[in-house]
Amino acid sequence: MESQKSGLSKFSKVLILLGIIAVLVFFSMIKSIAEMVGRLSEGTTEVKRDHLTLLRIEGPIMDATSTLAILHRVDKDDHCKGLLLRVDSPGGAVGASQEIYSALKRLREKGLPLVVSFGNIAASGGYYVSLAGEKIFSNPGTLTGSIGVIFQFPEAEKLLEKIGVSLQTVKSGALKDVGSPGRKPTPEELKYLQGVIDDTYAQFLDDVSTNRHLPLDSIRPIADGRVMTGRQALRRGLVDTLGGLDDAKRYLIARTKVSEDVSWTQEPKPKSRVEKLFDPESESSTFMHWVSGMKEELKPGSFFMWP
Image (cartoon, rainbow, N blue to C red):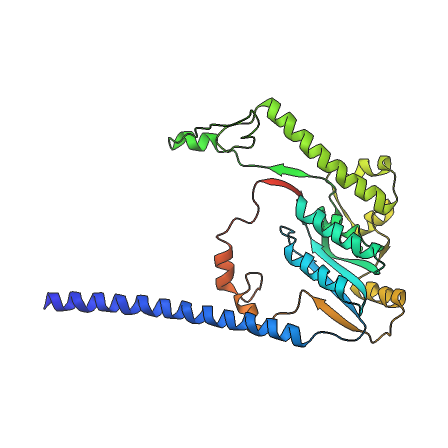
């Protein structure tokens, strides 16, 4: 009798496990179908008439790949008469921010009208990418500025000592393991890293000076990482005018001389309900938020980031 009960218990566990696997496979299939439908619909809804493009850059800028792909499409689209960049970002990785800035700059140099609108925050790398715009609109209370660079790495030497773990390092040069979490950096290493940060910071300052037509001496006093409001930024010459998204839209329409009822192409493309369900960035996807939360978002490195 006991043997039979034990057998039934194991059988039940197998059924539960198979059920979980079936559910995961089912949702995986739905996600794949949704992505396929999205790609097909994208190809069949290509805008053939003159339009303006609204590109949103939201959240930390950690990877430029998707944004660069969008800008490539805009570059090849002869019907796109202007680009409105809506920024709501605290910044991000140095390389990604510079890649997006450079791509936007190339579009503008090719003659595409490019206007920028700030949302709640456009700081550090978020401000950096905005420098490519010919006119920057900011809300009076937008948090912006934070011109600076930060380099961070964890230091876990004491923790490792407590648990009896040490790191043995074999390296080809004295600076090869700079930033190792297993030991404190030496004064010489900190000086070296400061030099790297100073050079990156100088690149940021040069681009602010060039695009905002401001002498470096007038930028340095406020380029110490401080954040400021849009109204304060206007007084410092970091933005052109105060206004919201609608103001920026009206300006771009007038600038490009298109009809007031011109169609707008949204980038990134709006997601369907099914796609939102599996999108880690979607508020409706609790499960995917939980999964993505298990991944480290900010890795050691240098960032145009606030705070």
